[in-house]
Length: 321
Image (cartoon, rainbow, N blue to C red):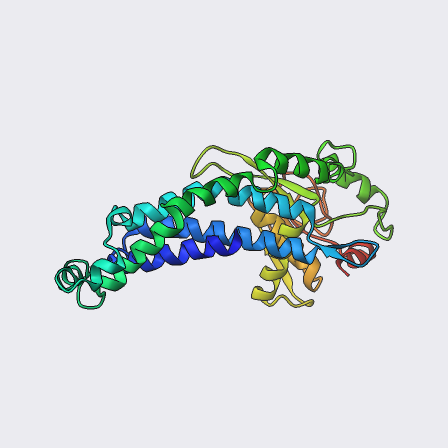
């Protein structure tokens, strides 16, 4: 099935070029879809082989889960692959003259002339592509292949049964446990433990880190759940691009509930621990100008002071490492 999918892609590309349609947008889109399908099947095959299992006697067999999922995907999408191929090729798939017709001394010259597509595509070559497509997908063998694609291995229902039986549903359930709030630790509770106390929290790359809200500039306002992996990668890349040094002072007015503000804070903490200056309001003022409040201490008020964050704690350094 994997090799056959690649063959269909190759035929689609060759007949599109022979018909002079390779640059037409809707033809390219059909071939793109075929390529994606063929690549997914190839990925499933490689996954099945890379996760092969051994019997007690030492025989190896491909992983049942990946094998059945790939077979199901190949069978359910085969009709679409053939439809795209026929749509690109045209009706000559069924009506193209045979090789014997080209050998006929009377018909041959006319067939080569009228089956050609310009000077670069000979008529007999183009007709051979039509015949190859017909032999593979539109004659007795093509019909036989259509049935065996679905029924081999017990039919589509058999693949669904095996997939459900082997799928790690417990792992899928466990991934959602951190979304219900039971495993989340409020940041205020971490701060209350003190700067030198390392929190006993296990963090995975796929764990949710923040719920960032868009402003709705290009659509409706919405919240986006951001995993640890995304913000960590973004912060590291930004810190490298900005060439942040440890002896620098950095100022940001981005709100911390926005992705820009989050990334700005995290990229400093994760990279080189410079002093980061945050504004606690919309209009920053000079340090020390807020009444009754020291500008050297972080504040949750909205007075608009410029505040300085404390140096990164040992817990944060440990988390970074």
